[in-house]
Amino acid sequence: MSFWSKVNNRIRLPVSPDDEYADNPWCNNDLKPMPRERRTYGAWSFVLYWVTGGFSIVNYTTGASFIAYGLSGQQAIICAVIAPLILCVSLLGTSLIGARQHISFMIFHRSVLGMWGSHVVLVIRTIPGFIYDGIEALWGGQCVACIFGALSPTYYTKLDIDLAGGRLKLYDFVGFIIYYITFLLVMRIPPERLQRSFIVSSVLFTATVIGFLSWSVSKAGGAGPYFNGTLPAVKSEIPGWSVMFGIMAFVGVFSPATASFMDWSRYSTSRNGPAFVQMIAMPVCMGGSCVIGIIVASCSEQIFGEAIWQPFMFLRAIQLDYYKNNAGSRAASFFAGAACFFAQVNLNIILNSVGCAMDLSAAAPRYLNIQRAAYVIAAVGVATCPWYLLSSAGTFLNVLAGFSVFTGPMTSLAIVDFFVIRKMHMSLPDLYIGNSSSIYWYHKGWSWRAFTSFIAGVIPTFPGFVMAVANPARPLNGWIYLYHLCYLVGFAVTGLVHLVICKISPPPHQYEGATTYIEADEIDVVAVIDSGVDDEKDM
Image 1 (cartoon, rainbow, N blue to C red):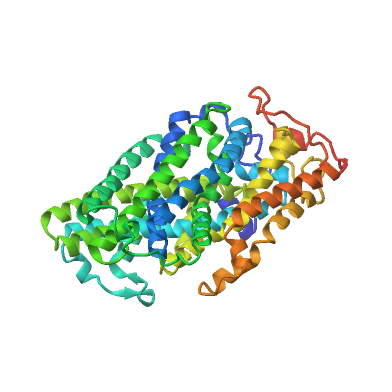
Image 2 (tube, one colour):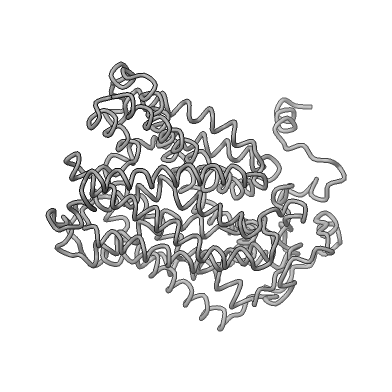
């Protein structure tokens, strides 16, 4: 046996010869339709998911960054209310797909884009996952710095050394490393066993941000200058478009997660249960956390003379500047920092490492399961150097909004194709066959219908996206205005084009398969491949 053959055998996932996917390069144990014994998420589990994911630092920070970006308090709250309602459309559709068919995001998209074409949405899903993993890890590290700064009054001064051109402090980098070590250990918990961790995280962080709100309003004597009109909004010269940009930035935060939510809804114990309970839990938790961040940032302008949009920086300001490192402030900073740290670990698992790893594992099923893929995402997350992406509120919002250019069309394509074009029919065995005998092989593994529709949805907003990222200070023009509507435009155009194309040229076998995963029909992938079906089906 050659050296490379030995390496290959060493890194391949161990499988039992009795497993139906043992010789199938399109499947592993984490990619099969979810068996009944692993479906452990009831309605309350999904409520806890959104309490953990909604009452989170990323939502708090997004809301606070609207103030730092220059919106008024009222404009920022409009963003916090409308954006979650837009995301509800995506969440409802993708939740039902996962709960009915019990398959992951990547496996589902094989039916839409083709067996090879589905790898395009893998790229769209994993790039935000890499970036957000790094950002969330940096925030987690800054929470660790708050804990150490509370334990030792000289921690900040002794490690006050600039790194990365002044964008990062040594005390934050030390926390960043400690966070990652802890995070890598917690990632070993299987997704179906995370509910208890969600409970602890949601209670601790919710109590912490409510504490932020109470203290801020008390010390500022109200909601702060961005609400009472003493500080006019910087972006008030074109308020409507500034608000739309804020809405799209908010949508950009969670659009990758809602677009791929079937990764989590496949764990549902009910066929429809998780979809509708989340229509309440998601907007309430996301919007509530965002509104708290908005008010606290406005109050911080009154208290500290600047709008502080990151909660750990707010903690440091309270401890070091307001209370001058007294014992009470250090105790409060310790417990609040610990709550934020624990919340960051859970949130990063939900949205990035495990959530995204469920999809990345489909890129190389023989070598990557959820756990291995999560380690890959964590490693790449460090390599993204997130401290460069968080240099200002404007840069942060541009990073968030940019993903909506692609996730809007991607989500629309999935919902329209499954519910309208195919009437919820799906042939699950064909999702695991990588040759022309699969009805989802289309043209050499690619669906021209789906890609035409997707590109049509991206084209209108892509020029504005490039302009905004290349030069954030560029004067507003028609392309950038259109970019400020990117998710809505992309969703509408892709859905409409896909309907028209499939009306003119219906996809083959569009009503083949069941509308729900039938428990009694065990999928034997090897048997399907070896059944002797070699003739290419009509495309």
